Image 1 (cartoon, one colour):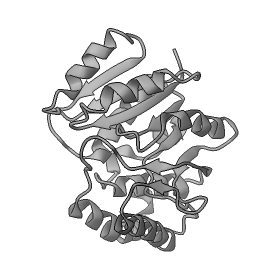
Image 2: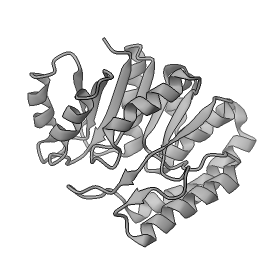
Image 3: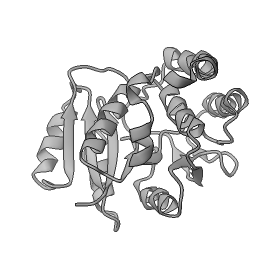
Length: 242
C-alpha cells in the first residue's frame, strides 16, 4: 500500500470527480485517494462507488450527512489518514485548479526535508490562470495581509494544495481548529509555523475551474479577513490551547 494519501473534499463535483481520480491514478508515483463527500445531491458519491470497483484498494470514500465546510471535511480526512498510518497526506481540490501532475513535486520536497509543502501560486510572481482581476487582487492581497499579521514568511498562506507529514497533523490540535472556510488553510499553516515545522513552497500554476461552480462566498472572505487577527491574538494569549 502507498504511504501517500490525497484527500479530496467534494460537494456537487459530478462533472469533475471521475477525471480527477483517474488523473491521480495515472501518475507514475502511486497515491491512494480519499474522497470526503458532503452528501452531494448530484450523485458524486455514487460515481466514486462505481470507480471503487475499478480501484478497490486505492480509492476510498467517506460520505458525511450534510455540507459542513471545507475545514471539517479535511479534518475528517486527516483523522482517517492518521488512523491508517499514512506518512504523507495531501490536500487537493476536485476541480483541476490543482494539477495532479504536481503531486510528485510536493512529495519530493517532503522527502528532501520539509514538513509542510505548499503548492504556491505566488512564490514566483502571480501564477493564476482564468481568474478575474478582482479575485487575483483579493487573493494576493490576503496573502500579504496574512504575512503582516502572523509573521509567517509564506507567499501563499491561503493555498489549498498542500502536503503534510503525518507527524505535523498528529501534533496540531485538530479538534481545536476554529475555521471551516478558506481561513482553515491559514490556521493549519500557522499552527505548523508556531510548532517550528519546516514549511516550503513549490511554485505551481493555478487554473480556475472549467466545470462546476465555485464555492466562494462573502462569509468565507469575511472569515479569512477578520478571523486572522483573532487567530493571532488567541495564539498570543492562549498559547497552551493553541
